[in-house]
Image 1 (cartoon, rainbow, N blue to C red):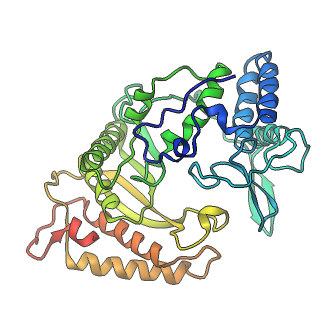
Image 2: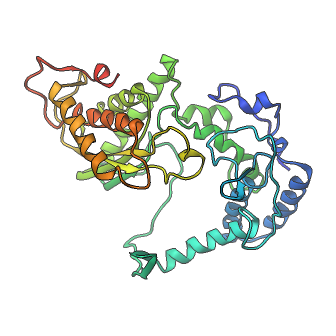
Image 3: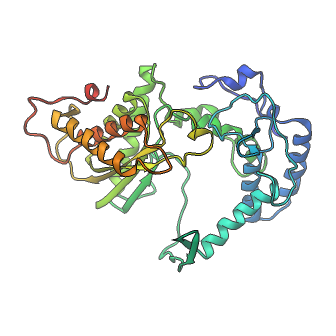
Amino acid sequence: MPEDIIEAEGWSDNRLVSYGYRRWTDLFNDRQLLHLALLMKEIRTLEEPVRSAISMAFSDHLTTNCMMASYAHGWRRLTPLFSLRAFRHIQRPVELNPWIERTGRGSFPNTVRKLEQAAAYARSPKEPAGEGKFVSVDPVLAKRKGAIHLGSARRLAFLENASVDIVMTDPPYFDNIAYSELAQFFAPWLKALGIIGSLARVQIMGESLVAHKNHSGSVRKFISGLGQAFQEVARVLRPRGIVVFSYRHTEALAWLALAEAIATTDLYVTRVLPMPGEVGMGLHGQGKRGLWDAIFILRHGRKDPITKLTISPHDIEDAGQAVAEWRERYGQLAIPFNEIDVTALKRAFLVGRALPKRKRSNLKEAMLLEVALS
């Protein structure tokens, strides 16, 4: 069994050690540990590539078979760890039969079935045709073999200059979710199965881009790291290529950090669009919170370096009008377009205007983006 200690020093969320947990196995009861140990023993006997695939199902299985799984009364089913992206304390943990078929959220047969369904879709894809129906479509055969690289987006040395048509990414959202901290829940088990190697904690935390808004050094590190990633993206992007990514936050500082990171490149914003970031269900869709992401589309072409991020009063007026039109168009959907979304998307629009293709000629009435965002 994994004997890894929970090294939470320097984490943005220290709840695990505050609860009294010291090892990752402490998050499981004896019955769950027996089940997982026996399952791991059998998985190790499998041949590749089946062993890696089944290990992925095992990893998914961990979140529903631990003492941080709760019961969702509204949906009458188990709620796994990370349904709320944090290590939250569960007063009345729920334990399921890990071998139950079909019924039972997160039982091992069901986690394996999820992988089978994904593989079946890849071999024979279908697209929605409306009214709950689907039609089969021909799979797109790749002209060359695909490749997956594990590493930092700040170092894309395996890609040549101007070699990529489209970059689609999902950068870290400032301080919203510390994925590097949450992912360590899985690491001891995948390491024990031989799926991943042993990474030093200092390396994991050092590579992670998470900002703490009350710590200026952390914010500067976030901007610098995100800027390096965008610089690498700009380097590998072809002259007519595009960059597409999503972003969401309630804090003005998070939007300013994004703008400052992009400003280190020759990329400019051609379009900002709203898109639902949550389905309006689950724990992350409850209460007063934003549910819409801002989608940014960037291209090469900005020739003048940006020394100050500024916008004009006209930009602010346009931002308000654009958001009002979005709200009128999308406000009647099942996913609410609320005041939090209005503020966030207005800030997204202003970030886009602060990163134009050409340098503004009339800056007499311009104000700093930092001021406009606040």
